[in-house]
Length: 573
Image (tube, rainbow, N blue to C red):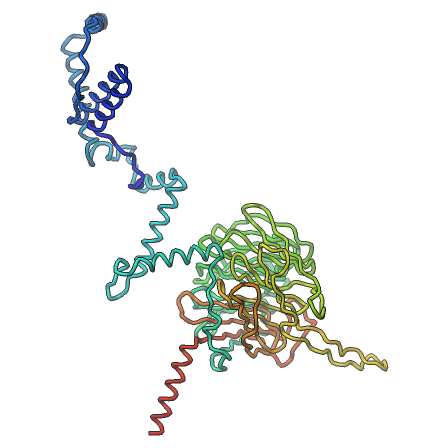
């Protein structure tokens, strides 16, 4: 069905008569004839309009001549006067019927006479023919209806009973979030340091955990490992739910990975899990059915090092690889879209939010690139400079990335520096050198020389970054034995350390998010004995596992302290 707000307006006879009268008064004698003719026709159809003060008719003799000529034509065709009268009567009846139908609903114009077309076909045709303004209005109405239904509860309160300012604030908040201008100040609301009882450890992989991904609804978490397997976990209880096993390299047409799993990503609608790794394959899995849906083979020419889903309705997937390319995929249709070129070295990470943009880090080319898909352009941000004032180290590789909003993002690399960037500035807005400190390499006497090797101070690399989207809080990981929690200033021009969480091992991946179906905020970490891209580092005391840290608010902590005090008082009494 067509949109009632954009239906064509039908004029009745009265309207036609008034328009004819106005046309006659404006146009003189010529306009008067046009007004009389238009008003007369409108009056015949509507049955209500009359011409006001019609001009006197002049006898020119044209009518008699026209009648005579028409009579001659009828005689030549052999038509009788009775047949002519019948035809005239039929035309008048048809005109009167059409006028009656145009007055109100239920007439012939509202009947479905077009080849028996159904309402669905008419609705589809109306949607195809609607303009951009009509589409925006329709989507806005649907969105407001959704908000109103979301405001209903079991008691029976409707959104109409709620102040309309709440809906306006929600619309404004969503609009700012899409534009990347919404910043929630949440870092001060959490209780630090984190209690050891709020940390859940999930063990099941034989080798180092390289990547993790959690669903937006807060039900499941996935972990990938160097053993080629992917494990599905219950985020609340930490129990193992499903295992996608890995296969040997020589096995062909194996439904899974046959080498290290390096990266994972879950779609925002919680339907798809994407995985990539050293076997150059991109596997798409079903979250609900726990089965392989599709496999993209021989697309990337080297190890797939990172992937990210675009946030929103469209399940658009971005993947990056050591072959220096960024590829786009449509997971809904299981199809390839395009390839983006620009990086001069292996790409190490990629991230995306709601806009059709993505940000990638280029490893040792020391650049970050913002890819504008629609505009088919890119912005290049160059790092690799010395960190002032001490010039302790120079950035050699940019390894990890996390977007805060559509305009601000974070990077980390092998120099131990975390940098804050804005897309409107070429250089980093703020940099924190030695974010995880530095370590001294042990002395090595095995070379047989008088002076042993080692003893050099080197910074801890930044191996992972994760931000709480559209807020002032992010976390970073290394192998110094801690995950560090940072707070961004309100001016978005600096950040500072607020707490540390013990975490022994190489933190290869992090995710910080607040699930849509939960009031809690979680930090999910993938920990291993080795770095995900090599074996040049090994921490023997670490355990290959997935760790889930549940953050509690200060109000919850205060309530817990009150309950403990009341229990102690009851025991004393």
